[in-house]
Amino acid sequence: MEVSNFRCTRRVHRSFALAAVLAALALASVACCAQGGERTFDLHGYGQFAQIKNESAPGGSFELDYSLSALGVWRMRPDMRAWLQLARYKEAGNRLEWAFLDWDVSGTTTARLGQMRVPMGLINEARDVQTLRNAITMPMLYDEKHGLVDEAMRGVLVEHRREALDAGALIAETYAAGSMVSNEHSSGASARIVGGRLQWTPPSSAWGFALSGYAGRQASSELGAAPGHSARHALVLSAKRRVMDWDVGAEVGAGRTGEGRVRVGYLQADRELGSQAAFFARAESTHRRAEEEDAAEWHNRFVLGLAWKPSARWGFRFEAAANRASSTEPASSAAPLRSRWNDVGVSFNFYL
Image 1 (cartoon, helix red, strand yellow):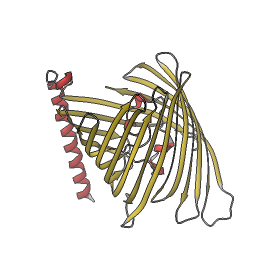
Image 2 (cartoon, one colour):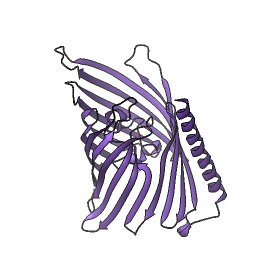
Image 3 (tube, one colour):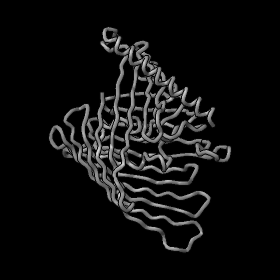
Image 4 (spheres, one colour):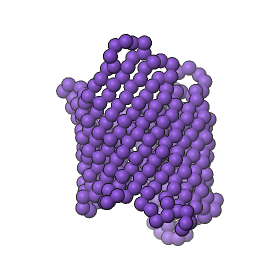
């Protein structure tokens, strides 16, 4: 175990050393630009510091949570880029999140190879950039405990784009993965997964639609789990629309993971309040059922929040939520266990 930790530490140190080199090159390359006026090297940073209080425990107090990320982009050629993202989480420590090559095969087709975000749903690729969202928490569709939408994958992806006046804009992505990373606590689980996402914006329309899905087999990432691969599949339907100064988005997903079956969905509405503030409301629900045991649980959540954005690069968030949950134990004649609780949170986020 000590040898494994030592090797992991060495890998993390090498990753952050590479990030330091990348940062130095970015600072030294201000005058070194790619074609079209783009810099050869770019370095960005973003993160969030949040205080969250869960009222389900008597005397519960606010707990600090944070995430910090550094993203480097090297434009090797006008048609090829290398991406590297390193992150630090309060609970999980340091982590390599992105490391992939991005090649424009043509003006409408791009291929990626390496470790990258899974193209699924509306916000999975930008889940770390808090300044793009008004809420502190992500919708439960993307919650790691449901195992429906993984954060990242190691494999190959091909993206094709088409746009026509009479057909609208279409983006089709297909991928094959040999490893899936479900959350910031996981270094990846062996998998044989194929999937894709289809995004469509109708011509001259305020609507946007997406269909995401995957299927295959994956080994468990839990310590001490039995060897072998179990079936996995998921399907997510997404829609968004601009309605009378409101940005409305809805997603519903269903699938099977190693632990059982899950259904989850949400509806969220955001509205700008002037140039520096925004309000949002979200209603969401999940239902999970174990495969081998007659056990099930559901969780409903309603959350309201405010975002204050003095700058496009930093801001503050506040949100409060009411939760209701119920669970049934296997082979039990007792009434379901029901609970209610509230949670609140405040956060500061930035983008550089």
